[in-house]
Image 1: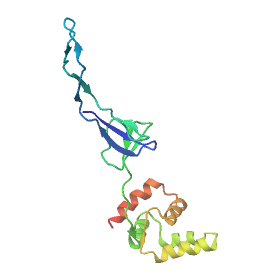
Image 2: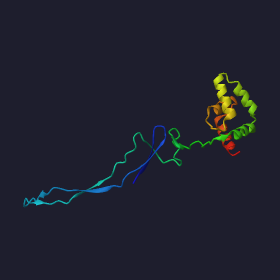
Image 3: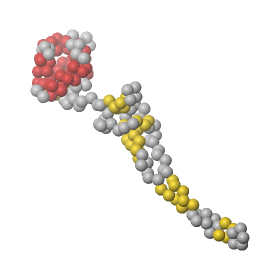
Image 4: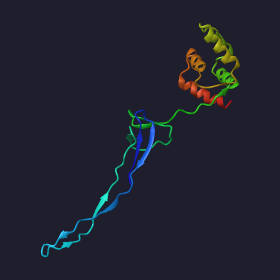
Length: 167
């Protein structure tokens, strides 16, 4: 049996397809007239070996092996699985403020940046999020906005986020 692995055009793992084992089919043969007597002579059945076709899923693109983690994505340029980003859990307001303090960003600095938001509605929303949220999600717009303001690269924010989750 042969197993092949498939992804879609975006590199998302679709799964594997394993061929069924080959099997034999007996094909009856018609009698053949005996050359001397003209009488019909039974012929043995013909044995045919059938190898089932391995059919990939629709749109499937074959890759050499499955991912170690089903959430990994196939990178066509490197021809390798890219492991998924770590799961970043929500953190509490306390954890967020302690994390910021560890890198020199005080709550007052965040509040000053929020106060500088030009749009009144956006500024009010940001203030409410900062002051009243009991937890923060890593990919919340305010987190990304403040990361940009304080020039924190995404990888650094993710690393700090994981560290904050342990505070």
